[in-house]
Each structure stands twice: as C-alpha cells, then as structure tokens.
Amino acid sequence: MNISKATLLLFSFSTLLFSCTRTPGEGGRASITGHVDQIRRVQINNPASTVDTIAASDEEVFIVYGDNTSPNDRVFTNPDGDFAFNWLRTGDYTLYVYSEDTVITSQPLPRIAIEVSVNIDDRDEVVEAGTITIFDEF
Image (cartoon, rainbow, N blue to C red):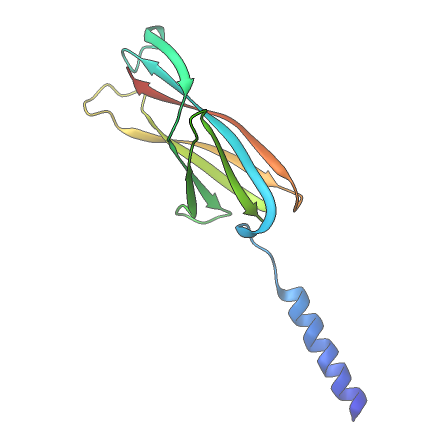
C-alpha cells in the first residue's frame, strides 16, 4: 500500500515537472539590447535629400514574446538611442519601432513598423539586436 502511494506521488510529481514548458517572456535572466538611429530627410522618399543621421532619443521600442500578436512590453530609447529589455526567458522575440514610410508621398505620412527578430538560446545571454534605422522628415 505504501509503495503504491509513493509510486503515485512520484509519477504525479514527474508529470507536473515535465509538463511545464517555458514560453518566451519575462521571468528569466537574459536581456536584449539594441540601438535606434534616425535618418532625417528633406523629402522623405528621396534618399539624396538626407540631412543627417542622429541617435533616436525617446523613441518607443516594442517587444512581442513568441507568437503573440500584440506587443507585450515597450521601452523608450535613452538620449544615445540605446534600449534594453531585461529579465527575459529563452525563446523567439520580435522588436519593432515605428518610422515614417519612405515609399508613399501622401500627406500625412503613414507610419510603418520596422521589425527585427531575435532569439535567446541561453538563459543568461545578452542578445544584441543591432541598430534599427527609422526615418523622419526634416
């Protein structure tokens, strides 16, 4: 009788332990860092009219965990254009920042999302998302 209870308890514990799958999101020790640059143009759809490239300060950067359809979190870039999402678990993530559309010439200019996909493989990893370039009219 005691052996069957112990076996049942061990089976229940092992089933519970192995049935929990970690999904991307908060609760880990990994981080994603990156930078946002802003190219300013006199005429947004003309690359020859570029005035300068500056660090995009105070821009919203959104993150989507795994296959979710809506953003799960957001941060703002610092004065140097840098950002970080901390305390993440392993998995796939999508980052995006809104930019003026450089193809369409209608007024007002539509905003589009510039996306970057990153993957965290190790629970203590710091993943560099690189530089995300956005555009704005000067």
